[in-house]
Length: 315
Ligand SMILES: O=C(O)C(=O)C[C@]1(C(=O)O)C=C[C@@H](O)C=C1
Image (cartoon, rainbow, N blue to C red; front, side, top):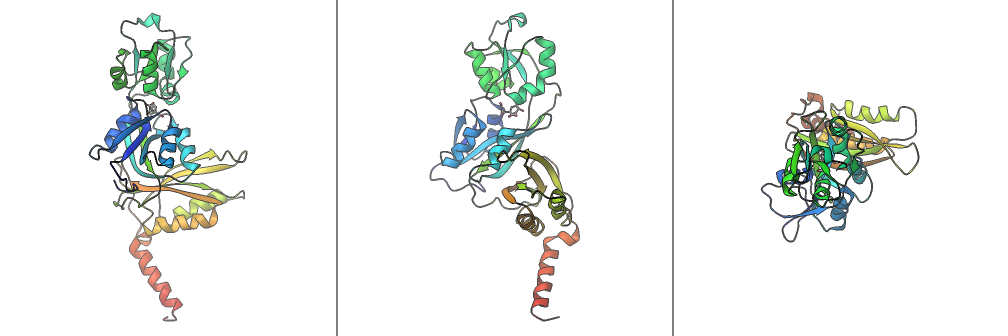
């Protein structure tokens, strides 16, 4: 697959498991035609570690949800540690069911578990359906379903496919507070050849700005002056020094595009640190904004030729 280091045999894909997670469904979509081995992992951190160690060629992990926002384990796991790059993004509709062991009556439900992101997306409905219960966090929605099957918990908030996979009954369909949520997953690999530009790409990066007035404005200006639109920006604690933040962001365009490459080079000059997190095909169904003529690759080539002429004393 583009952007992935060559693998001696068929590629190995780590994902947030066990079987039946939304991450597994997103992986099936990402590698529909690619084949390869699937290795469920107990956490996002474990899935990323498997890629870093070489046990897996790529990992499919959740990055952000349209209702609940970013997934901290993924944001921080990509910002720290040995570099990894995103080679692909996948958007998946997420709908949750309340699943129980067959024969469990609603009144018999005394505990409910799920992934914290799923619990956050269903907290209102759960409070109505199961008043007085404090939901328990689990490593994933499918891990919660497996815990119900094992008799460790009475109910799970999970995908319908996980309920089926673990032999559970659906007590309530669609328990989301805001139905129609979408989760954005990313496929990440060790750095290698980048996916080729498609003309409708995104680039992701993490930047740490200096501790001085206007530093964030300087960073943003490098995108604005080159006609590059940002599609996401959020701050995360660096965790190395208290109250110091990094900015995780996505912009339109591919690092092979002159304007994006120049913006990243400029960030490298004005920021304390910049980590490139990949350029990959945009998959949210939207088209990048039209590039202003003065920011096109042709305009950069022409300007470079003009400058070379000036330096050669031709003007
Ligand atoms: O637990 C899962 O099934 C996952 O794939 C994780 C995850 C997440 O981290 O956001 C993915 C989609 C849903 O928003 C809830 C949980």
